[in-house]
Length: 294
Image (cartoon, rainbow, N blue to C red; front, side, top):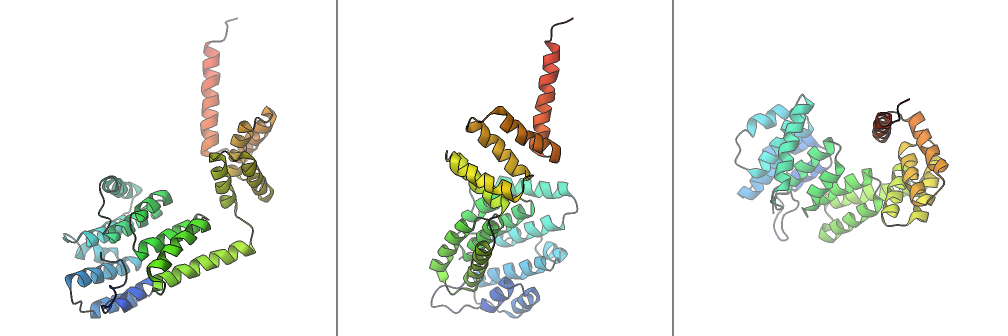
């Protein structure tokens, strides 16, 4: 069992039960106190204790403690924790980008999937970089309860309740009584309750429409986008998806132009509009070059 993966094997006393649970519920000072009192009976337990200890310091934003004490540590797990602390402690975006670039290189190689701490720290960095896809790719390589729990958190933020429920089922099959499984069950149940109480979000509707279009279900996509348009007639992603949809359905050019005009008027700085206008300017410039002289 890699450090930070979860409970002890069946039949063995879980020496770090209180430490682990304190960390999971956000009682980070209690976790630090538990770690300092703990007397692990094996190097494996000692490594896991240290992982939770220094992750608790990170949660308290005591990055200097982590960076100083883990300098030159031979443990791959603790070096992963130090990498995350270094990322959070960086003052400039260029420093963070450098850490991410190095992390990308590591992820592109063969990753030790038994080191769930590395996967968790990598996913945490990607989440801070607003890159949930990369975070999910990292976590997908692990099967620890904590990897699955973090996947559920990300999927819920993406309004992918359907996928979150699948990951929860994996957790329940692995250890239904574990604290993390109970917490994840509460998260999913709360999301289900909110989904039943409130209508789907614009992000969810557009995501479902994009998936339907990718599968050639254009009529279904049109219904979803119309529902999104009824919620907010000026939502940029809805308008952009309607541009794509209207072209695939062969609708009159004025329909597409209407959506484009709305985008241009209300969202001049949207990346699509900036690129579209750049192409228009390029076309106009080339047209002038080949225009007949008077």
